[in-house]
Length: 152
Length: 152
DNA sequence: TTTATTCCCTATGGTTTTGCTAGGATTTAT
DNA sequence: ATAAATCCTAGCAAAACCATAGGGAATAAA
Image (cartoon, rainbow over all chains, first blue to last red; front, side, top):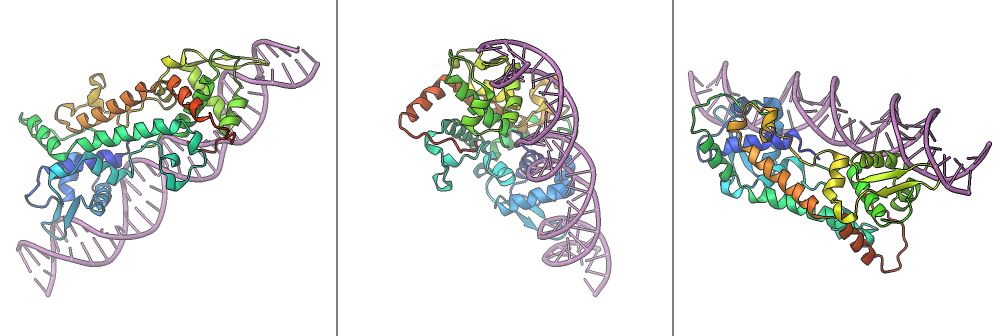
């Protein structure tokens, strides 16, 4: 029941990127340095986010990544699902009739999984990147320039 | 971001057990047979549930397990946490000051993880075993005696 | 045109977790 | 005694996780 480093690092990277929305492309090297993440690993995460249409890339010197949408139109859910697959702790066949769960009719836990799945998706979809950028700017009003050492 | 078989099987087992609340002890063998779970594996799950104080055991012939509390006082959260550890997808140091996250001050994602954690815990704590037992009885009003083949 | 910078793609390997299986000990009703 | 149960520990194969690594291709600047 844990979110992997994909989701954790990836969200941090995308919040970082969102701070530069509508300015020059941001390189993996710079994001990795600020966030304390392996460049090579971050590459793979960025590829997934690109594939999901959340960011686009500019190749060559001076290139990097930029957001593909306004930060207010990207939810934490979009980011995490792009990196982790669906966020549902239980993929119950009974919830998706087409997958045909043989005991869907007499299954009680089905409703439990449904409620958990819904609550997670609702929660992450309510939070948009622009809110996080704002909060981040407020925090960094002070003058602490220390690099982020947080492992989350 | 998946619930392991511990949580899935264990919850089913405990709902099963809750159907026999205030009657004779129920053996692992019978629960395992009804739920289609390995006996030997279920043993280990029951040990965890016992350690958490949710059930108690009666040893020897004719023994088995019984709930240790009224089903209305056991939440799905109690069961899942007993089996999976905490249900928080991200254990962020910044949320538990005593663990001392060095970048807690400037960390934005902290609030994201907090909201996800809270929503999951809230959801699972709202659902009590007695509700599930009731729902289960309503479903089985029909005459479908088929064994459960659901893998959840 | 050359060179440095940057993203792109694929493969590989160590570590940890998961999902059991197994053996044998202990307790209790008959 | 015997059978029916729980209890306790160990072990292991498969999968998932978390990177690391090598080389290629595109682009911009010198």
